[in-house]
Image 1 (cartoon, helix red, strand yellow):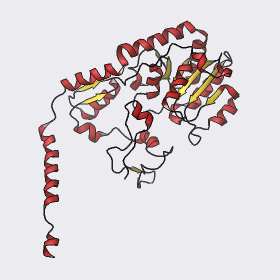
Image 2 (image 1 turned 180 degrees about the vertical axis):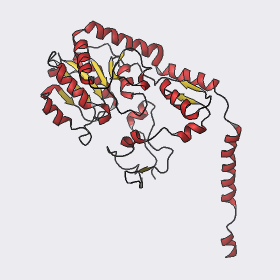
Image 3 (image 1 turned 45 degrees about the horizontal axis):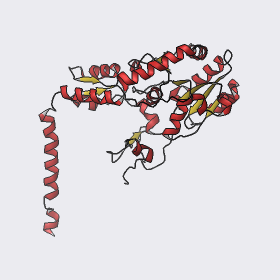
Image 4 (image 1 turned 90 degrees about the vertical axis):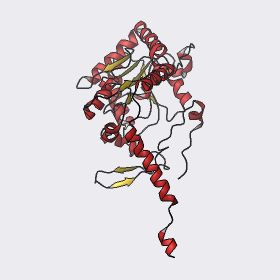
Amino acid sequence: MRAPRATPEQRAHGDARALGVFARRIELRGPDGAWRALDREAAPTDAGLSRARFDLPLNRGVVRYGDAFLVHSDWMGERILASRNAPTPIARVHHGCERRWRADDRRAARPAERRDAFVIASLGALQAHKRVDVVLRALALARREVPELVLVCAGEARPREVDHEALVRELGLGDAVHVTGWLAERAAWDELHAADLCVNLRGPSAGGTSGGLCQALSLGRAAVTSDLPELAHLPACVLRVPAGADEVARLARLFVELARDRARLAALEADARRAVDEELHWSHAAKRYVEALGTFPHARAARRSLFVRFYHATKRERRAPDPAAEDA
């Protein structure tokens, strides 16, 4: 097995994450009940661990035997407590953000045809759980009142998940929707900087914090997301739309209101920068991590000794002579 390799972009920002750094083998159980190995060396597809995560339960084995937990949201902390049914040390630490906002005019970063538009950006691949159909329908509805609204999808198309081209044709959006394809991080930041508003809906959710939302905040942009309990801890500059029969109408109304009220939009952007400075920046996240680790109890000796005993047992086994070899 080849060792996972970090991309130049990851190395430039100190991010060496790669799926399966510590895993020798990953298996998924298919709809037929059979287990199949996931080829970690193959190119990523839209059918695999990424899609399966919505069907995976809370990992109760980890939860049951953990000594303490760091979580992003109170909602996740409550789920852990409900699963353990016992007093448990839990600390909430925000998903961190950088400070990447820039002073230059955002319109100068746009192509000429979008220079005077109200640009809404969506970061990431066009996946079904990002409710792309809702965003497109809301855009079509809002453009009846504000024709200069356009949507930039900063990520790759996933036609097997979302046939966005068919929806664009159905809704008569024409040149109002632009899909960039896969982008390197810096190019994605440029798209967020050029936007007036970011939208990043969720549903179903795997219970985590949206990295796309955090990137939007790092560029000082206001954002709209779904009204989910695991996102309730995000600052007020992140506007929330509840799912339901009127989800499209509510989102369209937000698009119209923010496009017409630039003072409100500027206030939300100022709130986003303030939230990063005062609460969300990685320096605050790191401090909270240290504080939490300082208050957590020590690892349980009995459980730690299990690993120690296992290590020494396997060490002795490797050193023990092979009886079959001696008989030969």
